[in-house]
Length: 209
Ligand SMILES: N[C@@H](CCC(=O)N[C@@H](CS)C(=O)NCC(=O)O)C(=O)O
Image (cartoon, rainbow, N blue to C red; front, side):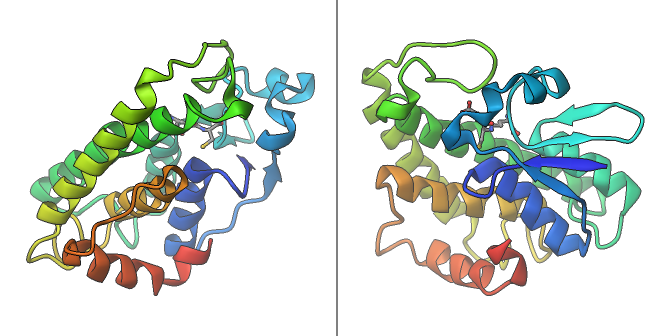
């Protein structure tokens, strides 16, 4: 197994945090996105989607998408469960994972990739080029701030996002909150649930992964 990774990118960090929580180690290869290594022919040949993270299995299968990689590893290493245990827990984890990705992660990425010069004509990752749409910058920031409001409400009265157990939803939401700082969207002072949860996340050894 081989993990295509980039230490500065948020999605691969989600996989690294997941691995740290599981106590798993997988050999990895750094693809330096800032130096355009995702466009190198050798990488494209192995991973036509040109994104990280990606997990190459020994039989030649390539798994892209952070959650697909984590689910594969979860099936191989079910303990400790990071996708919930009961049907209800699993549904709540899925709900928050999807909300964190669709409403949080995508919003921040929209604001970032439509504003920063190095993403000119690369407003979306992957094998196709898309021009930036400047009007999406402010909308992305507003959506990211909206996600923080929902996160604050979602954490009320709970230790972790899905309840009293730690899950991949916490990992994704935590990386979203950190990533939001890249576009200067921060939790507000009154968002005390986020502050408490963020401190608890930062104290976990996986936060430095
Ligand atoms: N939906 C994918 C998104 C992966 C993604 O966007 N990866 C970024 C790094 S965080 C990337 O590879 N970017 C390549 C580029 O910007 O060309 C996932 O969840 O893994």
